[in-house]
Amino acid sequence: MQRPRPGADILRTALRRNAGAVVRGTVLMGLYQAGETAFPIALGLIVEHTMRDRSLGSLGLSIAALAVIITTVSLSWRFGMRVLQKANTTEAHLWRVRVAACGLQPVARDVGLKSGEVLTIATEDADQTADIVEVVPLLISSLVAVVVASVALGLADLRLGLLVIAGTVAILTILSVMSGRIGESTREQQARVARAGAKVADLISGLRPLHGFGGNHAAFLSYRKVSADARRQAVTVARVNGVYAGTALALNAVLAVVVTLTAGWLAYGGHITIGELVMAVGLAQFIMEPLKMFSEMPKYVMMARASADRMALVLAAPPLTAQGRGRPAAGGGLDIDSVRYGTLHGLKFQVRAGEFVAIAAYQPRAAADLASVLGVNVPPHAYGGVVRVSGREIGELSVEALREHMLVNPYDGEIFAGSLRTNIDPSGTSRMVAEAVEASLLTDVVALHRAGLDHSVRDRGANLSGGQRQRLSLARALAADSDVLVLHDPTTAVDAVTEQLIARNVAKLRRGRTTVVLTSSPALLDAADRVLVLDDGAITAEGTHRDLLATDEAYRMAVAR
Image (cartoon, rainbow, N blue to C red; front, side, top):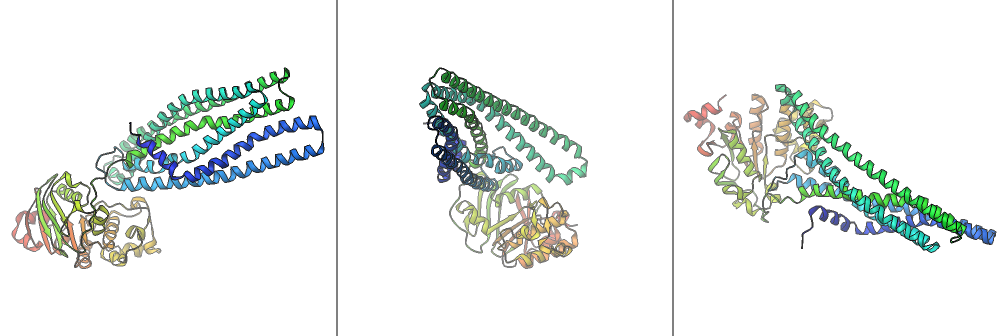
């Protein structure tokens, strides 16, 4: 048996999760369409009885029936759309959160998507996928209207009912072929728009370097090309949608005209009454709306499917490593045993519990490779050797438990839109915010603004200097108060005096907690209990900063400023 494609699984999940809302919405929207269909039927019956009975009682009963129909139409539409739109909005939120969560987790294979594309999938594609919750009830309710109209016309004359059924089948057959083209075009448009979004994200993150070497114009031309591709594809999709909508409207109008002319011919021949003619003409006019909705639904189904397929690229990506279930013991140290990865060649060292160790990497790439391994950005099977935290191998621990215990703060830590406080303590649960602000010397930034820690921060810290962003990232790492903290070049953007003060503060704040700093900063190296020299992928020397300065010429040349 062929396994369903992931996109179809996502749509089925959305419908199954909202089964109750879909059923309620279908019933209410079915009542709405049935009430709309009943209106011309009621008019035909009113004309029939008025011409035959000519009584005020019949007229009053007819008016009451119309009032009931109008009330049913109004209330069923109101509450039906409320149910469906609430379910749609909630479902879109759930998919956005799930895609965002997957985007934040490292995956074992490259899904070929940049962060900007994942953002588009988590917003636009999630919204379009959730539309299936509305599309199915509207599709079924439109079918109800067509069936009721066909039955009513069939009771008047079988030929009229069969004409509506045959015409509906023909229209849907033609439009289903066209909807496939819409799905392909929409999928390509979404991909190109996502690529344009990713390009913008890349340009924003690299704006300062671009200014530095005068690459603004080249970057603009690069984005312009990607944006132009997205625009051309959007025009293509609009053209295809326009052709689809125009064809649907024309076919529906043709069917309405044919039904009207056929009913007139049957009335002229005495096969149907005047009341039935009024009903047939009214239904022929009314049926255009549900037919239009019915014929548009395949297009929205294809769009939802295209978005679901794109979401599956993120959701179906396997995790970077099979998660264990263990938790590291409180406290504990760090043991790197013969790790071979990238520029690391049998790297081996230990950090005892509560020790402050600085690693002076002569090759920056080696520091980056070590940070990647410790940050679980590389699966254990992708490197040789073993990494142990509190005596347990990383592969035995759950990623969540490991990250609660050991925090690896990258040198380019992201700054988010919000406030200084929310950047330092995103969860709002840290008890170390004040201490972290003081240790990172972020106090001057807080003092500059009347709002203090509630001062607004723009996306990526656009309203902060490089040094302020780096200190804010360091404050966030310190506020987490993790058992093991790994810092990668935390002070490269600050001046020497500030760096000296930060080094002392970090050593004081982290006293008794295991701390590893990958750095070439003399201040941090001097503040450490022990310095390990990482050269050519292995530890070649160790000691205090001052001892190494006195005895190791290569170390002195590498770190002395």
